[in-house]
Image 1: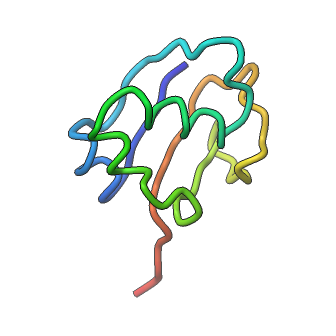
Image 2 (image 1 turned 90 degrees about the horizontal axis):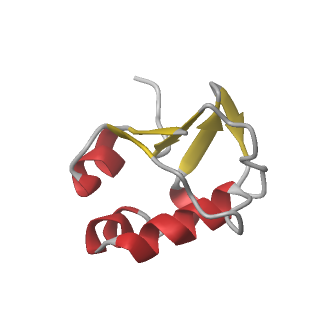
Length: 83
């Protein structure tokens, strides 16, 4: 699946997107955040406060307990404010 990173999440990880194959036990957005965080210090830094991270699966905003099975694209981003 393709994973995209936006705003300061992208800056902390150092890339805008990547294609990954998470292990079978990674079933939800929260699981994916945990798995990514364990991969590298940059991911751990980007996801150090997982409750503020927002996610979307195939362009639809989702909660951390959303299943990732069958997702083509997952995006992570910080909360945004209008202006």
